[in-house]
Image (cartoon, rainbow, N blue to C red; front, side, top):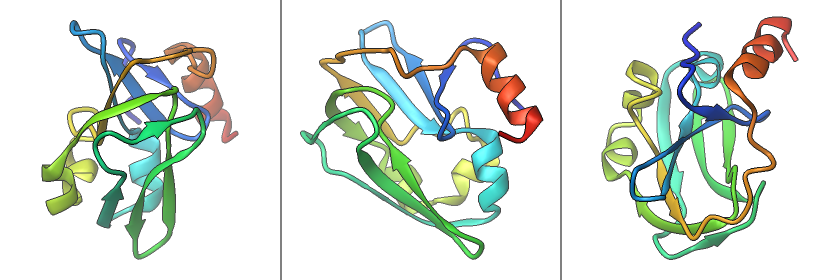
Length: 126
């Protein structure tokens, strides 16, 4: 199970990487894509959407399940990754390189989980 130490996580299995521009890229973690298996469809909210923490930003669908993609932070969606929408399998192949949405005007980071804690939660099956 791949869990990089240079990004943050959520308890609902999204990852967050802060950019030099002060934005946050959001994607699905390796454990999430592994549970879903072959992702066949991704839908994402529109650019300009203002999200609250925990609000639905989209969905990832596979034969096994549908996972709601939740906003880990409050912010405004400045970009969606069209490549991930067009080729959802990219999330399975490279979950930490395939971001889904980019947020700016970020409010609070209180809901983010440090890498060490996320590793413990995932390995314990919580």
